[in-house]
Amino acid sequence: MIPAAFDYVRAGSAEEAISLIGEHGDEAKFLAGGHSLLPLMKLRLAQPTVLVDIGRVTDLSYIRDAGDHIAIGALTRHMDVETSDLVRAEVPLLAHAAGHVGDPQVRHRGTMGGTIAHADSASDLPATTLALGATYVAQGPNGTREIAAADFYQGFLTSVLEPDEMLTEVRVPKMNGAGWSFQKFNRRAQDWAIVGVAAWRRNGDSGVALVNMGDTPILATSVSSALAGGASIEDAAEQAVAEASPQADLNASVEYRSHLAKVLVKRALTEAS
Amino acid sequence: MEISVTVNGVTHTGDVEPRTLLVQYIREHIGLTGTNIGCDTSSCGACSVHLNGEAVKSCTVLAVQADGQEITTIEGLAAEDGTLHPMQQAFQDNHGLQCGYCTPGMVMAATSLLKENPHPTEEEVRIGLEGNLCRCTGYHNIVQSVLAAAGQ
Image 1: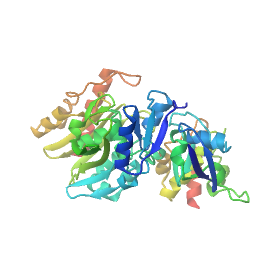
Image 2: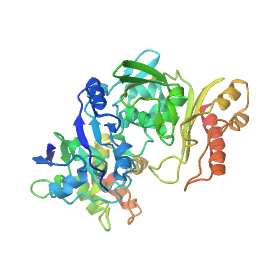
Image 3: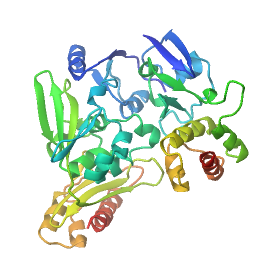
Image 4: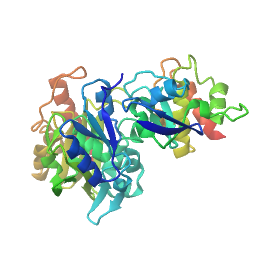
């Protein structure tokens, strides 16, 4: 399938990208790895009139030790996050989750900034970075701002990013040896999660987020509160859907999703403990 | 938009609409039809080629994104004198194909896999080829072919 026609410009830097997107207005979109946007465009579910290609802004492809967190540039490909010794050592949940995005060909192209900005509740890394308490750095014509993951996701494929803002960096706190688990329930290789859970735990502290349990990635704060209050894993897992609003689709009914969420949270917490 | 793409070592320059998919460019503009279109929705991997040495799904890349870059297609693997690439030979020796439709994509994905992991376990081969679907073989001989190529 062929996308609707569009104009194409290429940016060499974040500043140039922001300037170009501002010039071209609301119907312009950034193109990074293209593995969320191009499939939508090929089905004509998205029809931007201008694509600003930021795929060559290689200055934004990096993984750095920034003391208490790991800083990942927005143009860093999933394969690089998956195979990074630094991420595997300091944020192993993220390296593992990155290795579950799509398949190797997809991971050679898809980027951290792209998947976060696309804000799909069924994607793996928005929920994983949400569970880890990440901060997203956005740059626009008026400067830079830091957005907590918990404040970022607004609705279906919608985030707080303005149309002329670009994600430049994702900051993920180091896990400092916390236990973790990533549960991705699907029926076919390389498939989206029907339901997924990203979880970490160190004694009373934990972060649990759900994939595909609402129109945004869901932070399961009730599960974490229960654990902090001394609840057993079984009892905490019963709280899995407290913040969620699961949708029915071809893969699962609302009841099945809710059931899966509780089972997967229980498995995740068991593995993480 | 005018783009310049090196395909199997030969640089091609031409004008393309920005919405031209890389797989279209390879098949229709360059005329290399070894790369197949299967699902056209980024799942099956029949369209896999190497972009700067890494396997990608060419149905999910725009030709303009490949401007100035290097592409290797299935046609670019064999030597000048026609000697098969070790991966191609391994697929032949181990009956790694039946209808052959997924095969170019499988071979391109497998060669990329071995570049990143030269001695994979069977499980690593199966996971490493998750981006490629085959309806004929049940994957068994494909996996054997890749393991054979890795053993060399």
